[in-house]
Amino acid sequence: MHRRMANPRPGVPAALAGRIGPGTPRMPMPQPRRLEPGLLATLLFLSAALLLGGSSAAAPGTDVVRLASIPVMLIALWRLRELPPSAEAWWPLGIFAAAVALTIAQLIPLPPALWTHFPGRQTVLDGFRAAAIAPPWAPLSLTPDATFAGLLGFLPPAAMFLAVLTTDGLGRRALLATVLVIGVLAVIAGMMQMATGPSGPFRPYVVTNLDSAVGFFANRNHQAAFLLCAVPLAAYWAVRPAGGGGQQSAFLAAVAVALFTVLVVSLGLTRSRAGVILLAPALAGSALVAVRRRTGAYTLVSPAILTAAGLTGVALVGLFAFTPIANRFHAELDQDLRVRLTPVVAQAAMAYSPPGSGLGSFETVYRTIERPPAMVADYVNHAHDDYLETWLEFGWPGLAIMAGFIAWWLVRSIGIARRRDGAASMAMAGAVMVGILMAHSIVDYPLRTPALATLFALGCGLMIAPPERRGPSRGPAIKRPGEPTDR
View 1 (cartoon, one colour):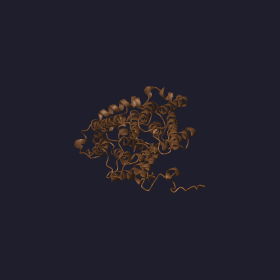
View 2: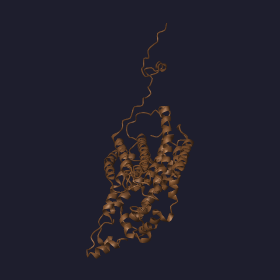
View 3: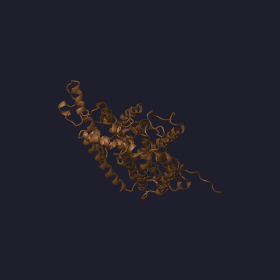
View 4: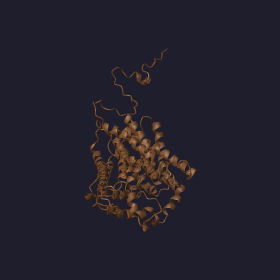
């Protein structure tokens, strides 16, 4: 009669227990990673920005987001001492520094012998003369208070970009997951807004689009831009290679595909024409995110399944939201606010060039140039074309800065598109996000909101390779089967 021997090594299968001797090297067991304080602060800041920073006008939430960005920026600057950014980061950092320096230059007081000769200052000079007051020293900006507020508006995107530069692949995936979670909450909020009507309690801002789902934003177009940015992120999670547990990974992939479809369908609730037009580029960009995974690591969801999910979402939008969206497209083109503003703003931009009128001065300048043929009943606080508005406020230097950034985005996106590795998939998702917001800026002003400016900075950071930690060598890393290749 044979006695059954007890397993001498708990946690190791009995069939393998006898094969592992004292001298046999053990496979390292994965250890749960602690949430670093810097990453936790960044996640909380990103959540605050997306939940509270949905208005381009002054609001209490805007101040909260700016204050929350300060510790995140300080932590990121401290971490940059140990994790210096790669060469890929210097171009966007230089462009951002140029924009900040230009804004500061607009606040420096200048002698009257200088500023009175700038284009567009004759009205101001006539006012001093009519009051019999000698022209004082004055800055280049016509609205210094608004320019200073605009300077503070650089804090959230700067903090997010620097934080992403010091965050590795795992931390970046946590940031993307946070965006998707808040995207789900925004969809639910939009459904509650449509269910309770214009006077319901779920609209966060008084001045808003009462006939549309706006989520956590004041503008339906900005809600649409947020959902469009979340679409390629959902695509990234849907095609991400399986990790340790196959069933769990399959479940997460299925959830990501479902979320991908829900985000597409939810665009119909916004009734945003720009959102509908930009849906095609967003889906095409999501396909680019998916095909980054076609070579190399195994994926649970093929790009074909993702394409089918996107087409299903488009069909549902057409089925349930076709009439209200079509009615907005059928409106008289010559009555559209953007069409009427464009020639007026372009003429003002040329009149105030080359120095510009100062960041945040659009509203004041527009009131001085608006004439009866172009007057509109709507309250006009932005040009609904961020490129024109930037030209007006920053002049020729602003055009140069915009051109430099667009050139960087194009060069970097082409470089990412040529890669076929796991990190390229996440980087492509960031490039698509940035491209969507740049395209949307042609007909709106999404980057004037702290939420979308922060999301824009997140996308720029994703386009740059994660940092590599410095330290003593710990031996070759052992890659588990099915482990993602992006760091």
